[in-house]
Image (cartoon, rainbow, N blue to C red; front, side, top):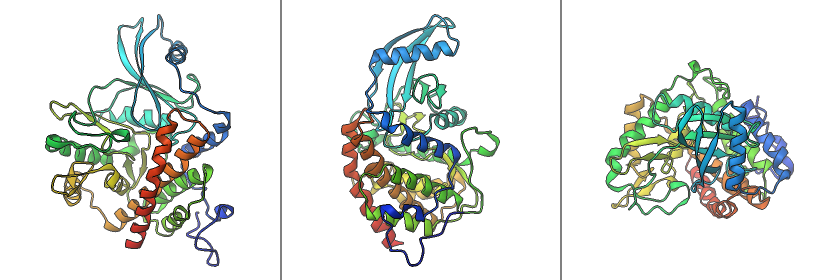
Length: 398
């Protein structure tokens, strides 16, 4: 079992030499595998962005290994957006599909802002395609055994993450205005959250996922251990507030009575829609999905960085709804009652996770030149101060 806190006679904040005072052994095995792989391989860098020719060669070898014949890969095009995976669109033609299909390759650089598992992403996204619009999963290579680096290959989906007049200039689809499409988008967004949390994961026979115990605080502790391990594995510079947050999260970990599927990153920029109709075409980026406490998703999408302000100055959750309206509509659609204390806890946890990503993993990947978007990751480090301030405000408030 994890320890509830540091020893009574320990200082308020652990130092780099004290990191073993907290037990991080409780963690999903697949997450531990990915984190250990990251540490093991990071010194093999620097990472160099792939050329179109290299991508073509990688894909050709992969599809040959999958038994496809008369393979032709054309129109390879690097895709922009995001701050994590290296992505390419391409067209695949082979003997069994002479008409061809437009596909998307999402593959891991050596390090990114979040170290996640393509097996988990591919597995859960393929299943959720029966429940909501997502990009269809064609293949995935969880450990890069065939492609040389972990990857998932998806069907290409049309749509936008912002209206053309939305003014969004931020990273990963954030910072825009959804304007006149809010009335069409908001109900679909609420439904996507509710559908995710209603999903019967226990009957899905998930290979890449484990579930925390019900009626315990394991759902929270697994998350704390995951992101704590990331922080100490990629530490560039000690940040006392991050360590303070870890201690607070361990001492206040709430009980989760009924673990549910958590998307992990559902927010503005992570859903696509037809601009003409406002109809969802895909819920994106399932890489952080896990079984846990649904309050984590609710708290995540409420973060100020992931929303926008309406013309009346009211903050809109994910650019769609005022906070109280969002909570009311989610509860009505899902049947889940939001516990304010658990919601507050996961607001702190999510600010902590974002600080770890921005000040830890993003900086570590940039310093080591282990990512194809070093400028973007370095820029994201500036957002770390925002999350540190948010952590302090939330802990004082609690």
